Length: 425
Image (cartoon, rainbow, N blue to C red; front, side, top):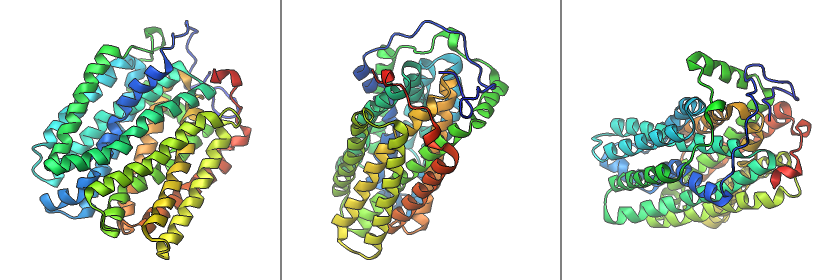
């Protein structure tokens, strides 16, 4: 699809490339599994050490708010890394940047094993995020290389099935590791997983961006492409909506360990199991999405997800603020938030990337940078508001009400073209 600016106006800063022979598509299941395994490096890096946050604070003699900043560092790394790796993947192909970023993640994970204080840990978490960014951005670019329209939204939903296993398993694995070793053992596991993915990627990951479609234009050219993307009002609105929706998810990731362990008294293993059970609802929504796409457009599902998420967040604030229903009520409201986010998350990126196929790496990078950049801002906000269920609910409501406003004022989804049914084949 030719890059567009607004209501079908061509984007002069992102010129169309000459027509080339279509890239043969590998099996959808294999593609989703491989890409999902690489993307999972990010969620594993974020979520696996959550049960250990209180232990890290005690071991390194620092406060819970300071420990949460190591999560912020990871998210900043994921955001900045994508801004660099995305254009590199447009210039050099998808495969090499993916493997290089994964290798950086392995190195940073190994260095955490000897981190002497919270400052060094924070810096290494930043490097981990930069390395993990390669999987996050390149997976989206590969999907855009191979699919479009409803087919892209469907593929992203399949990707989220694999990706969803990471937050389900990560805190549980982390909690089990803590039974036998210290929090540093979590990072040893991450290093081992990264090495495994290097082997898998080297053996199975093929290039989806042929040389004739690559865009090697240096720093100025990269900035020119980003400037062109930012001139597309609808694209900017969609990535803002994606980022604000991700804020709801990251408020849960950042604050849930304190809600479940400090507010309700669960231990590390119980937290891991309950956190994983919540992620089930996120997965369920993403897998329901392809079925819903047969009847409704991605635009309609995006609107429905953001509205439902705002309502669920408001319910969380009321239930937690009035202490109505205890742990079951708070948990149910949190799961409703995750389900609503799961409806919105595959559709916002699919709609945004469909507008800029000729610069898919850069477009995916900007999208991912906004998502994880918002997440980096959200994590300390939840801490400042008290690290409890009310704090999570307030962030969710604020973020998703803003997302609804951006949809109504900037994106105007009723004006977007509906992807052709044939694209879903």
